[in-house]
Image (cartoon, rainbow, N blue to C red; front, side, top):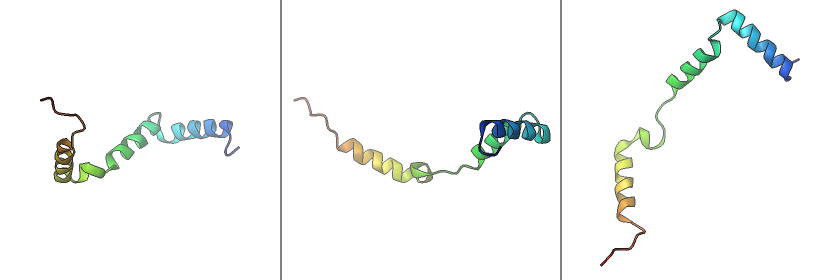
Length: 64
């Protein structure tokens, strides 16, 4: 039954019997904690410089 809905439901049942009712909650929690900083979160100073640069290149016209 692998790859079918019935097989998936059986797997859920087995995992909950083996590891407890909160099995899927726990693996989700672990995955969220493992996640590391990516993009601008890894280099805050670079993000600050990029934001300042973008702010100077405004698309709006000045009112005189």
